Image 1 (cartoon, helix red, strand yellow):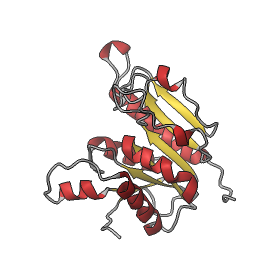
Image 2 (cartoon, rainbow, N blue to C red):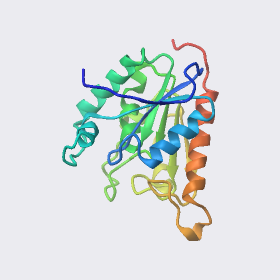
Image 3 (tube, rainbow, N blue to C red):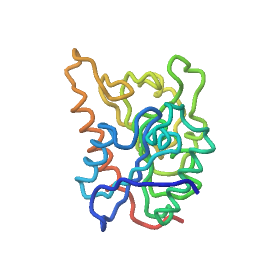
Length: 213
């Protein structure tokens, strides 16, 4: 097992626990991750953050390496879930890559729910390279918060995909992959981040508390 360390926000006895993974480029304590974690925790939800091995190596003084192979990222997710006592009472997800990796294991491990904050439906400029095959049959209740002009999957593009009925997409007007809108839109990055936090907290609190089959 790799070395795991966690950042935890929110009450220890919270009825809901959300495991939040970072995206490809920023660590678990980046300003955006901090704002999401503390904001959701402010709704009475315990939020647990962790880092993938490549990001831990960067923190330890290593070079700015690219993300680990998918197998390593998924293995880390499994290690995190095991370390937290199993999937039964967890909602998992994260920013971009972290949320995508969570979506690949959500059904298999049996978590209560999934939250993807800026899902990378395809690489920028390569709409033919879709990362959606598993989303068509996803059974885990899922919230995706997405900017309308996200280069990894815009509203016009995503509306044409076959997504499971278990998935709800919340669109942020004129937002990019970081939820940042253009000034002329009349919206703000801070406002969109607050909406993402509120949507995440509301989704987690709305989940059926009945144990999975």
